[in-house]
Image 1 (cartoon, rainbow, N blue to C red):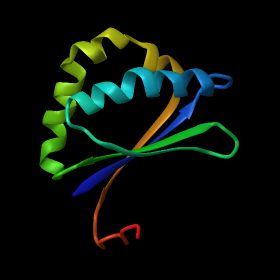
Image 2: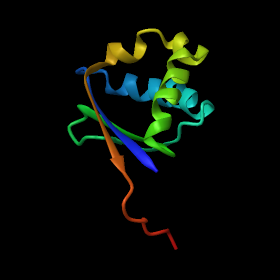
Image 3: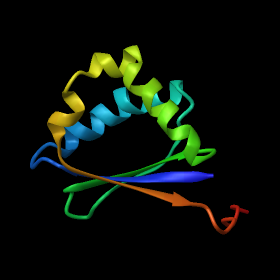
Length: 103
């Protein structure tokens, strides 16, 4: 399994709007395409939004991303996501240790 750790610096004063957009519109499109979002975080100063989405292999990412951007749900969003984002950083990480399961 691989994951993308995506860190977005959100434009000043737009975090609440971003969180609503992400939860109500962006996340459902990902889920409908089989792209699991496994974690979301906001920095303590509320400037950065960090989220993690997973894939079976790195090789499947281009196809999944192409399907995402071509989907009616993403097309309907227009520039709403990018209008919130000042900076975007994406890191691809690979699973190396099995995490502990909750008891």
